[in-house]
Image (tube, rainbow, N blue to C red; front, top):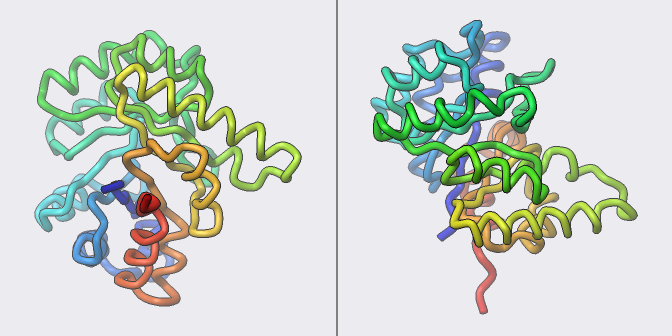
Length: 237
């Protein structure tokens, strides 16, 4: 069964401006409705999500994933909190979006970061651009899993989208050949999931963040999560 990971960063942002429910409550509701894990982004500045938030989400019993840059202070925090998995990614952009790793910038830091986390018993994956070179680079630094970043292709015009989807499929197949776990994530919603999953059916997990939160505000967490579970279910033969 393909895993659904729901991102709670938008819930944290809403909490700051509109008094949204506690992250732990959102995590618990998502888990009951069928999400296998929830994800929160942490930064060196500590904006939006506190260590207390992380521990409260962990206490709910939901699988917690941390998205973070491979920075020593954040690695230390992950070792203390002990999430179910760490997704190494670039520092967030201006709007707080997840961004794939730039191996030219982070290359020398990645192998030691992965080794430190794995030696402590934590699962680690890397958020990367969906192309062959980045899959090879992730494998070279010791990553055992990758999440292929889909944020750059979801709004492409039709003339460019076909080529981008083909590259995504090639990247997913190479990652599987190298025995890397394969996930998809980045600005996904129910509308964009169909042809992306068709291009990379081997994906074992899908991460959805803002679209899930927006849908949950309209129809509730339970239905929003169940609708996504149905949307990502592998096609039956």
